[in-house]
Amino acid sequence: MKCINCEAEWKTKDSETTTVIKCPFCGENPLLRKQEVKHFETSREALVAINKQFGTDVLLGKLKAYLLDFAPSLNENIKNLIYTVQTTGASKALKESINGSQEDKERAVKIAIRKMIEAFVTSEMAENIVYEFTDALGWKIDKIKTITKEEKVNKEKPISNLKTKTVKTTEVKKTIVEKPKKLKEVIELLISAQEDDYKKAIVILNEFSEQENAEAQYLLGNCYEYGKGVIKDESKCIEYYLKSAKQGFSDAQFTIGEYYQYGKYVNEDIDKAVEWYKKAYDQGDVYAKIALKNLNKL
Image 1 (tube, helix red, strand yellow):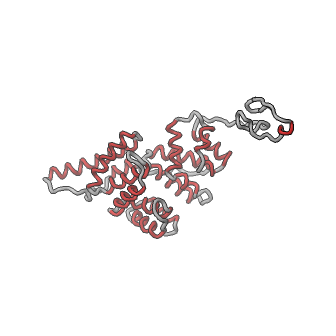
Image 2 (tube, helix red, strand yellow):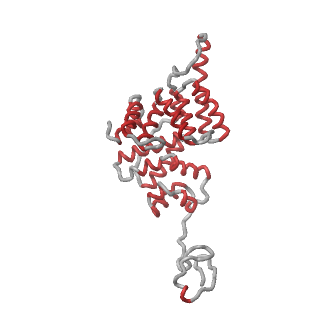
Image 3 (spheres, helix red, strand yellow):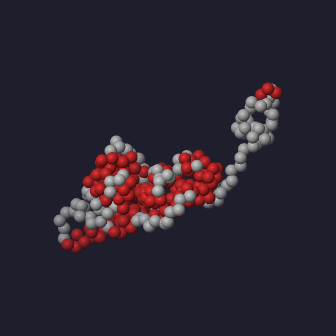
C-alpha cells in the first residue's frame, strides 16, 4: 500500500487495504490527501483564516494549537501577545458578547483592552491585537480611546496615604516629588517584560506597600497574579488587591468586583461584585460603569 501524502509504501493484506485509516509513517489517512494549510505573514490574516475555517471556539479558545500552522514565521513577540489575549481573559470577554448587541460588543472590547493593559501590555499594543481579533470576528468597532497605566500615573492620585514622619517643609516637598517619580519608573519596568526589570520593580513596590501606598499594593497584586518578578500566588494577589481596594483605589475595587462576579480566586458572589463595582464607579471608573450596566445594576 502507498500513502498519497508521504508516498511511503508498505505491505498489507488485500482485506486490510480499505480499512487502513492511518499511515504508519506520517500518521495521515493514506487514501485521502491532507488539506494544505495556507501560510500567512501577518497575525491579522492568520486570525481571520482560523476563524473562517474553525470558528470562534478555536479563535477564542484553542488558538495555540492552530496558530503556528497558519503563521509559522510569525514574530515571537506577536505570538506571545496573541496568547496573552487568552491568558488574561480578554478573549473570554469577547466570547461572551459574540451574540450580543453592538453596544455589548463595544463594552467587551473595552474590557478586553483593559485586561491586556492590566497585564502590562502597552495601550497601543493591547488595542492593536484586540482589534485584530474583532476583525477576525467580523465586528465593526470604531477605535476606542483607552487610558494607559502611564497616563494614570501621570494624573497622580494624592499620596496622602503615604506614611511619613514629621519633617521640615523642604523635606516634605522632596517626598511628594520623588515618590510619584519612582512609581512611574515601576510602570516602565513592568512594561519592559524583562525579568530583571520585574525584580527591580518588586523591590520598589514592596517599599511603597509597607508604607500603605494603595497604588503600589494594587501593582503588587497584579505582579502576583501574573507572576511578574515573583512566583504566581493567588492568595497574595487577593491580599494586595484587597488592601488597595479598602484604601479606595478604584482599579483594585473594580478587580475585586470582577473576581466576585466570575468566581475567580474567590467564591462567586454577585452582591459583593456589585458592591465593589459601585465603589469604583463612584470614583468615575468607566469599566465599573460597563460592568454594572451588564449586570443591570445601573
